[in-house]
Length: 199
Image 1: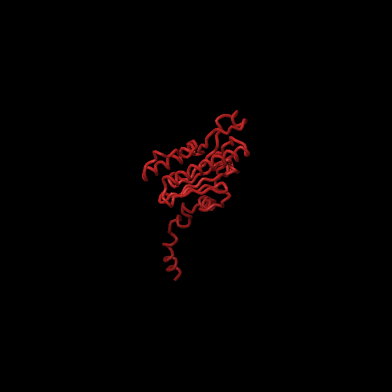
Image 2: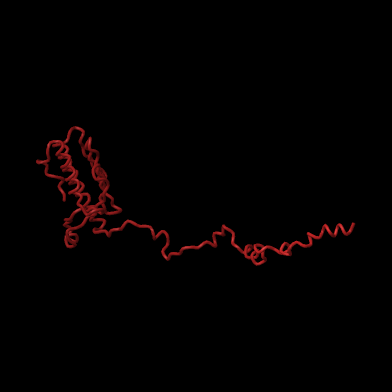
């Protein structure tokens, strides 16, 4: 009986010793390396960072700030004078060439010129910025600063100068007059109109 059992176990004893050894893929060194392999997702603090010496708020573009060319007192006098000049000449414009629904109003530093069907012009003083703002139905919004003809004239109170666009350097009087003359061409012709009365 024992001889038969030993005979049956013979083939098992003859199996290659390689079966009792760990395969090459399971080598202890490989297992340790696998354990040290970092996880796919790392903590945010371990992620690479980019540094800049300039704060984020300073990296954003800012609109250029212009230096005031006149004092607050001189601005008030010049702006009031020129807005009154515009008002007077635009009243003539509406009376001579406009229909019954063309009108101009000026109050508290705000001038409205209504020209159906073309739209409404709005000009208003901006004392905090020492500017005059224009909203045109044809050319859109614009801002203007007063540029004296010379420093000597400003000091003497002559107040000669022009309102210049902060966007493209064009003059306020030139923009308004050019656009209104274009409208008159569609109505009956601008030959007899003397203009807005300012440069």
